[in-house]
Image 1: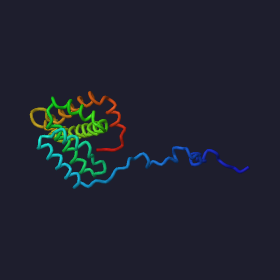
Image 2 (image 1 turned 135 degrees about the vertical axis):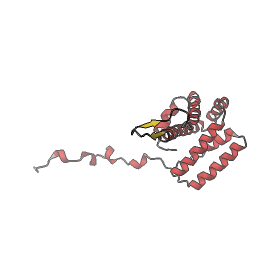
Image 3 (image 1 turned 180 degrees about the vertical axis):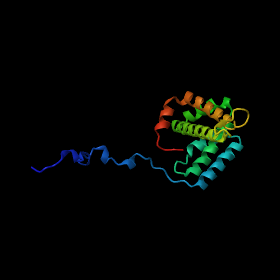
Image 4 (image 1 turned 120 degrees about the vertical axis):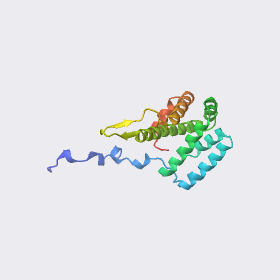
Length: 186
């Protein structure tokens, strides 16, 4: 019998059902590439609806045409458009609009996309406010502005939190789980 060290044999290479032989490309979703110019023109069309007073149509259009395949600049443009729409809708109109979107075909997917944008807006607002509000002092410590200045993101965060509350009320906590597990990013 040959002198074989059984501990050095890679048995995963011999088993076709092994996780080592799993094609990892099947885990990433297929997205079509979108140019920043296309996202910019879509943002213009959505803003035109917003200026025309069709807040619900603008929100629906932004949620149905998500640029998953865009570069970071295109995604930031679309995020700014969605946040602008959310800030233009009054709080008394939030629940009826969300209810109509939820009741429409594909409503769950649209509300999940909205939840993605709410979370991304919260992350962007908190990251911008923490980096912007720090000022180095002569003592070597940094001081956070708490008096007066530096509260630019507070209103946006308040709007996003209000939308989050209404969205969880209508779509349920399952929307949060679906957003956290979805590999497509906005």
